[in-house]
Length: 313
Image (cartoon, rainbow, N blue to C red):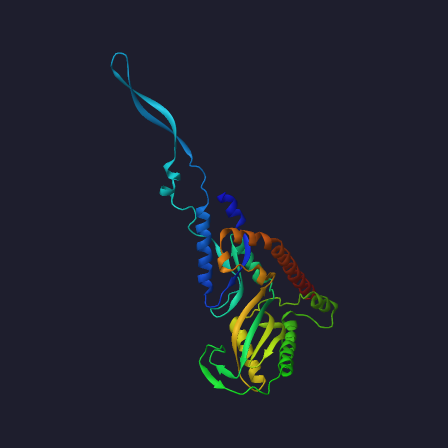
């Protein structure tokens, strides 16, 4: 049973990281729960060993004779009190990190999944966030919990002006994306890749926004959905700050929530009450085909692009 459990713990899965929790603490919590559940599984029966035990028997003459009796006894080395717990640590890796304030989909790898995380990184997959902002103030770290450094009016900001601004951001980032992807807009290849949503950098690039739209506008609050590559939560907070400046006001970020990382979406992310062996095994199995297909598709595309560029040299 333990061997089967270990075999099923090979792959990628997603959990929901709550705000206020460090990613290292999350990883350690998941590891601790898995080790506890694995050690609670039924152990195999102890191995048997041949033992020669001396016995005495009294003969008819009244004399005692020493003989050896052969028997099988459990090996003490297999006893839990001697061997201790079977699992004391697990190999768990993390995908793209989220800082303390941010929340959402957080990808982890266990067993062979720790190697898959490298391919996951090299595939340059798009992630999506919902980002909440508040007009009218600025702080030293672009968040609503930072030290207040300025207040401003925002009555002149409308949904139309906000949407025009996010369109400008998307347009400028789209040009940068094409440059980092080494694509010519006039080629058929670029058109086909754009239709399939496969335009992505060939290597590590600065943060790039592939799409952004306004989901909610209720002054002073607003909410954006941002699709991006190679970003950090702090970069997204800075985007909110810069939007405020471009609209002749100020703005701070009140929430950064990741809603997708590659093929993993919110529905795939295990809640804190589900960070246990059965749920994680089930999540790995459910994600296996999607992960393999995404990695094969992305890495094949990147390799083909690299081969094409070498041929042009």
